[in-house]
Amino acid sequence: METDFLKTFTRIAELGSMAEAARDMGLTPAAVAHQIKALEKDLGVTLIARSGRTVVPTAAGYRLLEKARPVLADMNGLRALVQESAMQGELRLGVINSALHTLIPEMLERYCRKYPDVHVHVHADVSPQLLHQLQEDIIDLAVCQHPAFDLPKTLGWSLLREEALIVIAHKSLQREPPLHLLKTQPFIRYDRKLAGGRRADAFLRAHHIEPKASFELDSLLAIALMVDRRLGVSLIPDFRSPLTATLDIAALPLENTGKARAFGVLWKRESPRGMLVQAMVEQAREMAVKYGEAYEYQGHQ
Image (cartoon, helix red, strand yellow):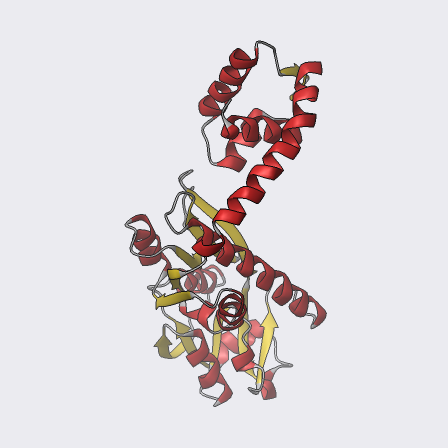
């Protein structure tokens, strides 16, 4: 009896859907159906039955489920035991620049404190390049924007943050309407070669605003520093960084900005560094919760 087939069966029972279990496990529906049929053939009983739009275990399925869960838990414990020494070596992490200024430093601090024998090589690039590097096994995982297309089932994705467009201005201008600032103040443009810059440009066109552009930069942190120096206002994704906390800038919300910029962790489901990758994914999720709660407390959400 295949342990993986038991995992698939228990996940179907938990989700009540073979299609949902397939998506959750990164398998095709056909592969899930094949595993269940093979398990039923091996045991000589029917394990699941349809009940309306869901599937439920049969009486035999419930009996198997009762015994399978502790067996799978024991297997996971054995795997963790023999892989304790696997938490060492090199992990190659690709990140976008704005993540370097927000989640990444503390995330790495926690990760390296927990796994001191892991050497993390951090490489900064734009999201499309990071996706290519992940697919070519140049990096092991990436903190980047979600691609504009559906991901293949070979890749895992976990959302860390969504960032709507905002206007940032010097605090002396924070009582002015944000659209008025875009029309009247010197404008620091976010690089249109980047997805966030193109989204900002589309917003300006939709509102028939032709700003007085003085600069165009690909660094959100640099833009914030220039706004602090009263060199203009800008229209950027709502990135919040400890590095901007002491600046004299104000974040002014906008209405009807369209879809927010989503960035998260992207990784290959099958990797020779799987244990290291999953540990980093879990650390990233913890940091996302922490930062999200902090923003909500500060009234930024």
